[in-house]
Length: 316
Image 1 (cartoon, helix red, strand yellow):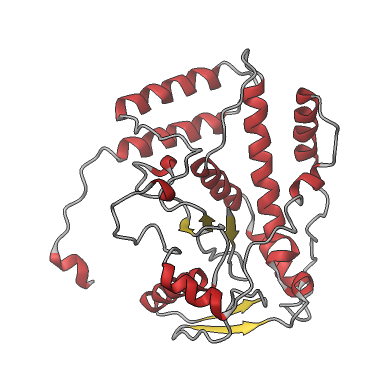
Image 2 (cartoon, helix red, strand yellow):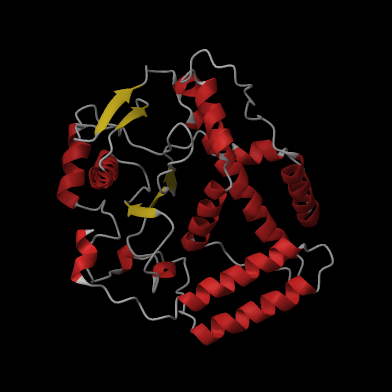
């Protein structure tokens, strides 16, 4: 899969992550109505010019509704067409071959998200390796999406600000810049060391694990043939807006397991198990119990009937 990241300079307006997968209807998506990201698909799980145009069109509609206009800085990736024009988005392209120096996302934002994501992934592996069977269930696309969204949520506004300052977006600032570390933090290194010892693998730096896929292709060079083929095949759509209900084998990920939607009673039972498990550990602090109670309260709210809408609600 590929992931697209976009944020404003202060970190107060982070667009939803865009995840691009290979399949239109992965089996793990069955019964899932809302996801914490925007999901698109194509055969290579790459960012294409068509997908990018759809993303910006959706963003522009949001800006029109909010009566806002923005200045959007883009690198010279092949899928970023120079012919795009939107009413509430002014696009400025960064100089070529300067992405690593002038692109704030490349200055540390993406790296921090990947570090948080891979930390969660390793924690998941360690937790399952500790059981008797020593078997680890596969991570499906939905699992990855949830972990990605949580990872992005852990990136502080201050980290984002510092990345923009480092790239020169703020002049004559007296603010002390905390450069995003190129080395994984102590907690991440300790978790990684625990994992490598469990599986008996040769120890490599966690930093290497974070950046292992940096050189993978995430977009395709645009040519006239590729452009017209993408239009004629129409195989790059946004899954949340597609009205097609017929699902073929080619549209499903055969390697993912179909998820059975749990009942509310199942969920409440699971929450009771979580409370028992958390309460049996000495190192758990009070905030964890509060977070569990908050979650249970939000789950209970889902069972409440929707508030009835009145026509006057639409004319405020």
